Amino acid sequence: MEGKVFFLSPTCGALRMMMIKSMIEKSGGLVEKREGARADYFVFDKTVAACRKKVEDLRRSFQRFEGAKPVHVQWLEQTLRNNTWQDPPVVPLPSSEEERERDAEEGRERESLEAVPKKRRMTEDLDKEQVEDDNQTRILAEESRFTPYAPNERRGRPVLSGHFEHALLDILDNLGKHRSSVLLEDKRCVVIYDGFPKARYHSLVLPKEKIMSIHDLKRSNLEVLRHMHEIAVKLTKHLRQDSGCEELSFRIGYHSIPSLKLLHLHVISTDFDSPCLKNKKHWNSFQPPFFIDSGMLMEDLERNGKISINKEQALQWLKDDMISHRTEEKMKNIPALKDHLARCKKPVCTGKVY
Image (cartoon, rainbow, N blue to C red; front, side, top):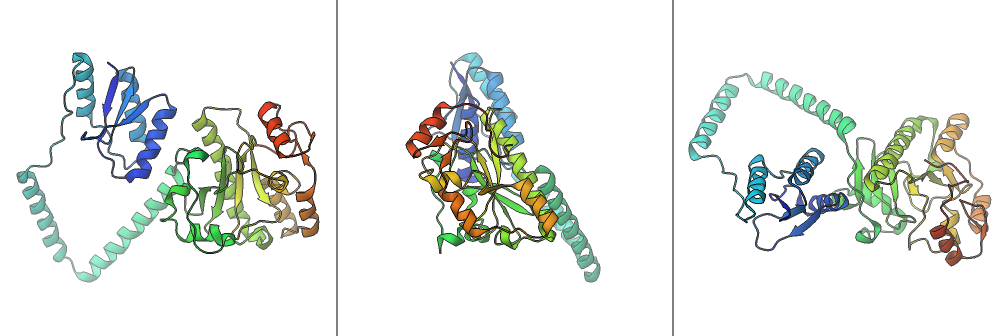
């Protein structure tokens, strides 16, 4: 009999459940949804230890995931030992006596609060709010984690309103509506999936400050650019770990002529394996010199105080011959390029990689 772990319904909804499912499957487990069962999902594995580890990993990774309680792990071990199925235990709700005691305690707290002068209470409330804000800032800074990366073929296109040119602005203004597109959010930036990925891994780092493009940058923006770059580098490390492939390499940078309003930093894997990569313009837009490395752009901005691009020259770069980023061979068309990309495993030799 294979191992089974019982899960309570999580409080975080269907999207987080999908992420949990993906995480378990990547680690070699099998997740099965059972109709009529009191749990949302069961996890199957060969050993109790492996099941227990998955539960603990999930409890650490997802703060709002209620997961299996200790009593359920005990039930799991008993079930495996006896090799017979029994319904998992239900965690009891607080007794009515406990509830009455809690209500009484809350009443005493209210009476105590009413005895405090109103002005003093307002001051204490403001102090409390400040502490909570400070704690939230610290949590965002120290504990933000990337969500597991969903493969391109499992993701739908983001539903956007308005003109395509303003798609990123729409996402930034309506993050709640586009939560499934978000990999990470902190106080300064948001990391999202590219809606039309040109590689297996293709994400965008957006600043929350509304800087429209690289052409609007000033020296005063260097701090936010450095933060975006730092987040991008952390994302590459996360994706290597998440995929189990330490050989993954990435480009991190900007297009010379962006197609969308709002500054966005591309983080793209150098496999360029995607059905969305369809023409010469797509390929050349992620190769130097049209694709500007993030570090080089920051150096240029610090030195000159602005980013100057010759638009005519940049448009010509998009029309240039397609050159392999691994061998510097000329590619005659997209099918030839894709065949070459599938076969050639040499390291990238053009532009900076991370």
